[in-house]
Amino acid sequence: MPANRFNAFTDYGVGIGLRIPHYRHIFKEKPVVDWFEIISENYMVDGGRPLEILDQILERYRVVQHGVSTYFGSTEPLNREHLKKLKRLVKRTNTPWLSDHLCWGSVDGRYTHDLLPMPYTFAAAAVTARKIREAMDFLEVPIAVENVSSYAEFNVSEMTEWEFLAEVVERADCGILLDVNNIYVSSFNHGFNPFDYLNNIPAERVAQIHIAGHSQYRKYILDTHDHPVIDPVWKLYARAIELIGPTATLLEWDASIPSFDEVHNEALKANQFIANLETDPA
Image 1 (cartoon, rainbow, N blue to C red):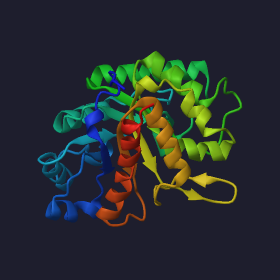
Image 2 (cartoon, rainbow, N blue to C red; image 1 turned 180 degrees about the vertical axis):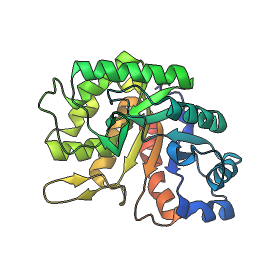
Image 3 (cartoon, rainbow, N blue to C red; image 1 turned 90 degrees about the vertical axis):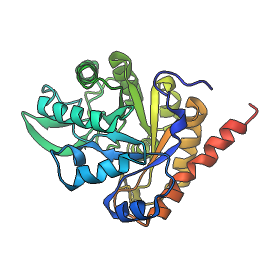
Image 4 (cartoon, rainbow, N blue to C red; image 1 turned 90 degrees about the horizontal axis):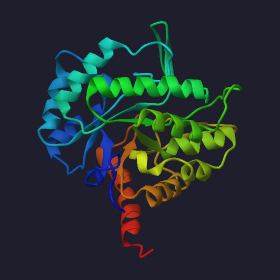
């Protein structure tokens, strides 16, 4: 399956998030890792140890930036100071693409520091897409937006989540960071078929995939990123790459973080699904 302009980084393989508990291991052992994903906001500073660490990583590894606070879905204008700091980091890392979440999280300059779900309306899609285009023009780097996990829905929604995602990315002409764990979490919480989600998104716009673990409770699932990936999520991943082709894949493990080797080995399980796809005569 040929790469397209969004999924053009098929050689990126499988990466993991760069996390503080692993710094010592990385610098001492110099493990072979396809790439690291960094949380942009952790390095949007003027100097100090975070940038020293980042520069050491950049000497040896490829890095992709992932943001958590641009809030494309908020109704207020984009934060220009945030974008300026983000652009400086983009130039430092030479990230081939930049991702952030399809969500809102700020009102009148006050920030929740949370990834809040959108109302799935055409008006919200128009506002969100306009802001994504504005950010891409300013940052001069491709943007992929990530579907978030959610625990509540809006009565005013005019379409499904996957229809909303497709509407936004088509209007913005941007990519998708497809989080298959988030699809699974939301499907359980809201009672839809996760494969309906996968089968109805513009697969040609998927630039990157996230996989992760979560915590399951009696009535809901919480997206905690503190467990290995479960089999149903791996099945969603297998279907995703069947639809999309080999795609840059990132394992998120952000709490109760085990050893570097355990995290990396969990991520590398994705390679078997990619290999199965590449050897399937169909």
